[in-house]
Image (tube, rainbow, N blue to C red; front, side):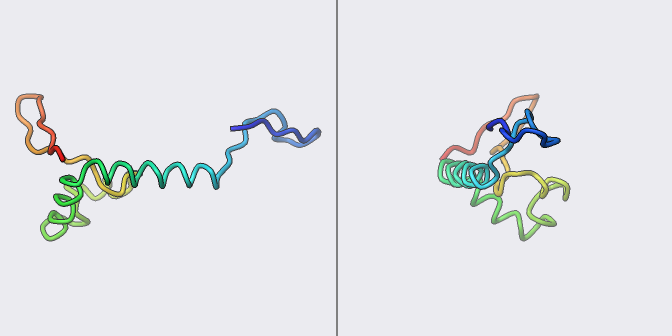
Length: 84
């Protein structure tokens, strides 16, 4: 983020978000996550046949990730990752 240099501007002195850069960074992070977690991507694709929107709760579709974090198993407050 940078500072808005415009004098007399109501937003002067406030942080300005470089939205094109932010979009590039988000895209890069999504691609990196999908690349590093192919098992989650496969599980998400398979879940689409059984779960509305591929997720257990529809509000999860609003999360910023394209592929949600899907543990392989969970029991007694522990979860086991899907791995690669």
